[in-house]
Amino acid sequence: MLPLLQFVVAIAVIGALQLLFYRTALGRAFRATSDDQSVAQLMGLDNRHIFALAMALSLAVIAVAGVFIAVRTNFDPAIGPARLIFGFEAVIIGGLGSMWGTLAGGIILGVSQAIGAQINPGWQLLAGHLAFLLILALRPEGLFPKVKG
Image (cartoon, rainbow, N blue to C red; front, side, top):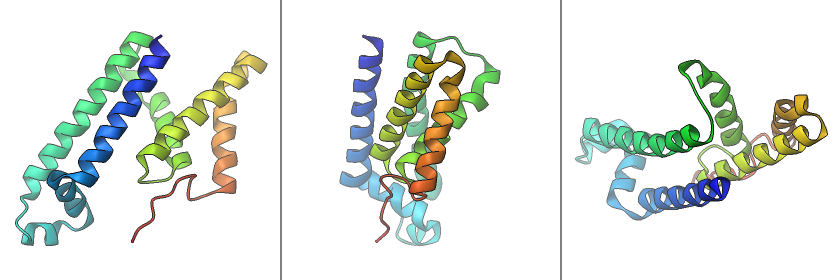
């Protein structure tokens, strides 16, 4: 049940972020400030306040992820780089700027690692990295690149 719950919560969080970023004034403020801080400030946005809200939002999402990691496995401060590489690979596979692409990238990594572990337990991590390299070689922009307009 836990993997299914994690998947459902991931979809809900990504859906909520998508709605926030593309359907609200706060989302427009986030995007404007990230595009050009000077122009956003000239338009009346307080960059420090926007950065503080963005940090709060990111910490809330990290808290949700942290709870699921704590329930699923043990962790310690030294595990960060090992987890970070999987996040990096998921974002690159999905395409920079695409939240749904990042979810797809994470699913691809997870499935490839599961297949690798079934073939040989020592191949679990290798299979994920090979899937990343294969997709990077075939589509360097990722599977769902965000089109800048």
